[in-house]
Structure formats: structure tokens, C-alpha cells
Image (cartoon, rainbow, N blue to C red; front, side, top):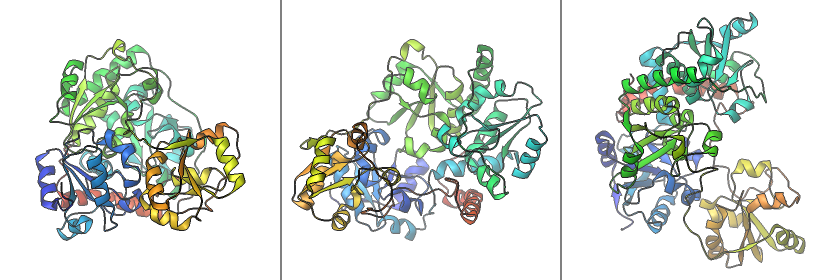
Length: 527
């Protein structure tokens, strides 16, 4: 296909309104993507395209439209996608500027469809919330209240509301009855900002829990802006539930899913869908990662339900595709499906999965393209070469991981900016590439060889092998060969975000409903 083949703003809009399959892919790094993109554009950076695209866009003849904002990345992405076997790849006509010129709405931040949907839910359902000052007063009075944190456990450990318990989103309907068995106990759901607390609160309300239920208004951001103190490093987690609680939760979740028009399917039907070459079908296991690791359907991908609803664009990157959910009790799958259906997805729950069908275990094997023609060296060999001099180590891990710890003397590299990286790194007689496991670095070997004309080697097992050999590590950002654009720093992230940034983030969320109206393609329908 010619590089000049394009799709226009009007083409994309027609596909979205018709709910036909479309993958609109922004191939810039996450930070520039977060500064402005179409509502249903998904971010698959050119720097790690090979690692992500097979899972995110599994059908090779999907209509893919790629764009950048004039950086020259999109045409490279077309080449790479076609080399990977994708047959219908085009450029967005005139890139992001063409979208602007056509009057297309641009959204900032990440996971915007989910966040905008959460705002719409509150707008249409008047989801109850309590300000931080009121929640603090309840805690000070030792009131009958339980605080449930709907984020991932690692986020909860970073910072949490005093007395809060980690119950990631899809677990709430399953676990809340045992955490607050007295119907008079007040349940307060929180997250970092607004989306997961609103969806979590409304989930409990939709499922018919009798307790008074409210979101912590504006989450940990609202808590900090109110001058309150957060806890750090907590480990309070939900416990197992008894069979009666599980059965009650399953019945309630199924009723909610039916109201949202979630479809029912079987393992046999899913296998037929999987073989259908004309339609993209995702299979997501929405239980906890620990449950998934113990046993799961062989083709399933672990996507805990709360994060699937929060980051749908990251997991299901083909808008208009079919999503199939599975669990082992009907609660997590039905509640997650109820939200995806309201977000305009064609979603089904497998009703007949048994424990005996969960024949796979451990982590799912990465779905990566094959790479050949590279030579590996051991950590000990690299250490020897460094002592001899004239070797440059390029580390392709995330910038956050690099700053935390890396091989002494290594340079942080961004694959999409290799020419600039190599300009900033002193010339060497040979180069060694690494990342956490060398999974990403191996794709850069041929590129570095072509640009330098020097021998290039891959560190076997990546920086993890260096660490396993008990060799020294260092931290810091003293050798960044590219700008740290690989990750957008969320205003609610960490413990030192400026109050102005946190307030600006809340103001942006409040404006999302109006943006949805101007865009007009969302197809959301709140039950």
C-alpha cells in the first residue's frame, strides 16, 4: 500500500457513528499524546509498537489509521505495521493538524473515554459523594463507616485514606457485603481522582446494597486539597467471602448486567468467534491477577475488571470490536460487562465456564513478533567490556525504571528517537542494548547497527540478569539521551503534586461531559 493512502476525519467519524471496527492509533509517546488527541485515539508508541500491537489489535486486516503531529513517526509506523502483516494501514489525512482543521474535538490526559464516561454517569445518576472534610469528621467521631479504595493495590500502597481498605473496582460488589455486613454501616469509595470512585459507588448502588453509599468527592486529590494527611505503605486488603455472599452478589450482578443489555455466551460460541476472521474478539479474565495466575482459560488475557473499565482503550484498542469477559463466579464479569455495555461496547459474558476449563496457569506468554539476527552477551562479559572501555550501554526500559536503577554508565534511550539518542551518546567501538529483560531492546539491535556501523549486542536477560548476578546498580537521571516523553505524569500521581495541578485536573474532569457533547461520537448510554 502506498504511503500516501489516507483516511480523513470524516471517514473516522462515520466509522465511529456506525460502530464498525476502527483503530485510530497515535504513535507518539504518551506525554505528547496526553496533551491532545481524538476521543477514541489509542496510544501505541512507535518505540514499543511491536510489543503491544498484536494484543491490542489482534486481527491483521483491521482498518488501522495512524497519525502523529508532524514528527515523522506515522509513516515509519505504517512500514512497521505492514511488515508485521497488517494489510489495511493508512495515515490520518494531514495528521493531528488535519483533525484540528476539520473541527475535530481534542481531549487531553489518558484513558479519556473511561474518565468522560464516569463524569457522564455522575451527571445522569447524581452519584452521591461526600467532601473530604465530612469524611474526616466521620473518622474523627469513630462513626460506623468503612472506606473502600477502588484502585490497584500498588496505587493504594503508595497513598491511601486513613483506615481505607484495598478493594479494586470489580471486587466491590463481591466483597462489600462482608466488609460492611450491617446495612447501617456507611460505605465510602475512593480512588485517586474521580472516575473509579464514581463507578465503584454507582456499582454498589446499582447492585442494590442497602447501606448508605457515597464516593469520596475528588478522591485523594480532594483529600489533599482539603489539607488532610494520607497514609503510605498500607496493606489492608479484602478477605475471602463465604458462598452465601458470593451467590447473593452473583445474582445482583447478573441483574445489573441484564439491565445494561449484556449478552450471554458459551465457551463453544466464543471459540467460533475466535475463529471468525471478519471480526475482532477480545477475551478478558476480570478476576484478580493472583487468581488468574493460579488457573485461567488458555487464550484469556488478565485484565482485572476495575482497570479494564478504567483503561478500556489500552486493552481493547479496536473501537467496535467484540469483548468477551470471563470469571469463575459471575460477579466480576457481569459488573464489568455492565459498564462496558453502557460505554457502547458489544460485550458478552461466558456463562458456562467451569474450573476444569481453566487449564492454563502462570503469567500469559507475551504475544511478540519473532526477532532474529542478534548476538547476546552475559552480564559478566558486559562488566569486563566496561572495564576495558569503548563500549556504550543503551537502556530502553521506561525512563521511570531507568531513574530508579540501571547499569552503571548506561544511557537511557528512546527507540523512536534513536538518531538523537546516538548523537548524545559518545561514539563507541561496540554497543550493548538492554531493558528490564531485553524484550524491547532486541527490536533495536538492527536499527542501532544501521545507524552506527558498529557491532551491537544484546544483554541476555536484560538488566534483570545484571541484577541477578549481584553486580552494582546506580540510580539517577544523569545520562538521559532523550527527553522523558515516554510517560505522562498524572496530576494525581505520587505525593508531591502541586495543588494547582491537582485542581486543574479536577476542573478538566468537570468539563468532560460538555466535551463529549461537542464530539458527538461516544455512543454512551447510562442505565
